[in-house]
Amino acid sequence: MRNRILHNNDEADPMGTVANLFDIAMVFAVALMVALVAHFNMTEVFSEEDYTIVKNPGKENMEIITKEGENIKRYTPSENQQSSQKKGKRVGIAYELDNGEVIYVPE
Image (cartoon, rainbow, N blue to C red; front, side):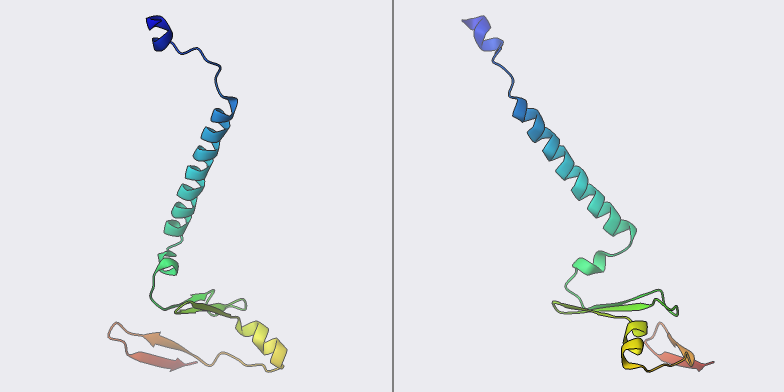
């Protein structure tokens, strides 16, 4: 009887291995998502603060993404210009200094 308690020779549960593989896959997926967010410096997406992101500034496929509270808005200038049949051109560049002052430089 003593030998029977120490060496439990019941059949192994085949679904136990599948459950362990699922757990490992979940841990790997979460670690991959955290690594991607950290790599692309997108931690502000998860913060409570409002923010504005400009993707591809000055190019034809530029996008402006704004978060205000719970609302996230996406603005693509090229799409809106085509739908309203208005066209424009770049007339200058604006720079924001460390003290918050904005300087406009016409081209």
